[in-house]
Image (tube, rainbow, N blue to C red):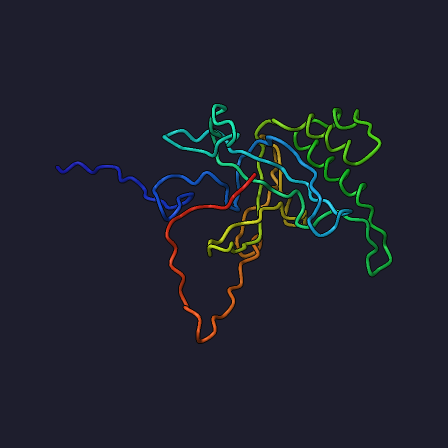
Length: 231
């Protein structure tokens, strides 16, 4: 009798076109990650508008995985053990504004609400409540000290596709907003999970390619599989 061997399942998930290696950067999807740091960053177009970035990393991958350098200028610090990504905590920046309905939105209060959600996910609400600061910038520095280098949690990460000048499509990553369908981050051991199940059609804003004119070359040859990803 011929022995039936177990077949190895082939899969292209997390691979780049130029090699068979796992990509060092996260794509949108459901991921188990830890937060290495939290930054409050001004938007380039408005000094009063902020994004909160969660700098996340997956659990160690192993198997010859080669992550980005932890510090490109000091490579003695080694490489990340997992895939990394810079994820905005909200699809939209935080800014004082007044809605068409007349409701006033406070930038700082909205940021505090998001920090509560994050702290409760990490079981760090008591630590968050102990923070006192004069400015939102000082408050977020303390949040980074408290919740950076955190334990692993579940995340549903969405994003927006964009094309760099070399013609490569990258992802601007962010957490989808809370809705009746579920939440974007959750503890690993949470009973009765409400975590969003990633759906690319719902959670990723696809790149819309501009139509080429008659005198333009319809296809652009790429010489490699590089990345412009920066942290």
